[in-house]
Length: 195
Image 1 (cartoon, one colour):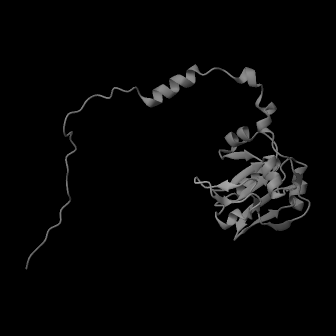
Image 2 (cartoon, rainbow, N blue to C red):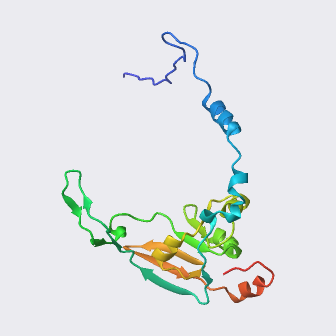
Image 3 (cartoon, rainbow, N blue to C red):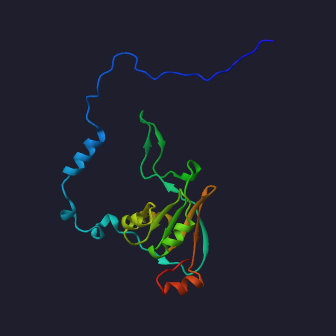
């Protein structure tokens, strides 16, 4: 009978051919040097709270639990043409983007006072959008990326109250609004409201 033996392959790590020292400076050292030389813009820009880009769209507090659906139709505002000049989609063409793409995460839109609740509800991939406050400061505090709710997102989704969770279900969006619970209403007097 023929016996086969299987052994572990061993290879020596060595240099084959000629080698030269690296002539380029370390990339990280270059980045750090440029950052150190960057001008201080804080005096020109003023405090972050006054930046218009940091102002979130405001929403009223939800008064009752409610679920509604939205089909986010979009209407093309101008002709979409191919490189050869033929029209792919004419101006006025209306379609549902969810027929072509899926939303891999939910949007959780909350007032800063409900952030603890949102952090408990959020999945790893979810986006948490704030209706007020400093998203950068709160993000640093919580260790999780937080974003501001922009007016165009508020208008596009028809948002009027928060907290609300927006999730895709098939070819539509489901918006689930949460009213403060009785326990949350009692604790809101202490400053720690929870929907």
